[in-house]
Image (cartoon, rainbow, N blue to C red; front, top):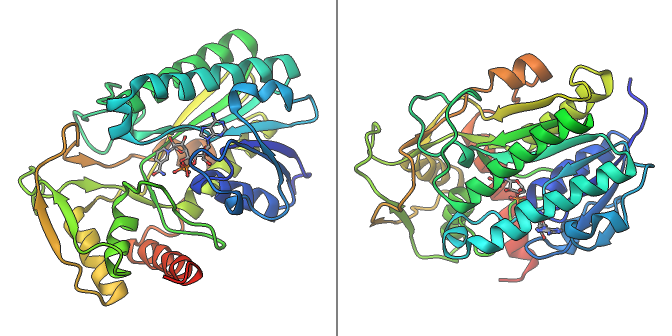
Length: 331
Ligand SMILES: NC(=O)c1ccc[n+]([C@@H]2O[C@H](COP(=O)([O-])OP(=O)(O)OC[C@H]3O[C@@H](n4cnc5c(N)ncnc54)[C@H](O)[C@@H]3O)[C@@H](O)[C@H]2O)c1
């Protein structure tokens, strides 16, 4: 039994941050969401959270010693945009985190969970990918997240922060009425579901000549509710002292199972009953053939065990959310 805590959740109007904030509230913690609504939505902030509309760059205005920790989701995360406008990513992802770390230091808030990404690894030499794999990001987005990971390592060593960087693989699904809502959408499952809803005519398959069983890219899809659980476990590990001041724990979060683009499309066909036409398209530069996580560290250090590894469950939850939104918009 843990006592209720108070957390600042940056980016809590977004997909993952909103879901984690909802889970914290469900277990009785207090939550303040700090979000500038640049890619998030006011209605994505879960009921019961205090909402502050503002930038992480100005976190010092709101953060004080009453907080037990910070969960930092706020970032830009479009790989293609980061190639076209790298400066936007350095300013927000790196500059924003630098300001946040300074505000935490000044306020004496010494626990941090950070949303890192599989994109820090780039093209892996071996799969499944462990945290010991070389980090060679293939986009400014991945590079900006890796830079933040390095920044956090230094902050832990020099200033006694306890931190966990959770490197998500492909997050999907929905939980408690909150789901994936990016604009533009770049993630496969919500894009295929747009076809099932009649909002898009067909799904583009970027490359079918990769060295994989069916030639399409293989990814590791993790249910957002399982992902959220890992954040709660990371906070608890810090509270117990299992991740002590000075340690920067880095954990991959994935199921350890890969599904190809074609397998995802086929699963959506089964779940929705829609034929989902495909269009063959050119490979996208920088898309690795296979990205599958080893989540052994998360299991060993946090006791994290994904409870919804079945792709059909992930797709079914994403489909329920997508249909609900579609009806709400009266489309
Ligand atoms: N969704 C995925 O599959 C995935 C995979 C790996 C890593 N991540 C990381 O997880 C985090 C959350 O991703 P998401 O899919 O929920 O994205 P999202 O765009 O839905 O959420 C990000 C939120 O941060 C807010 N934000 C951005 N910059 C801000 C700033 N400077 N100040 C205040 N608020 C700001 C946005 O308005 C938005 O609400 C990101 O850091 C992303 O890089 C996501």
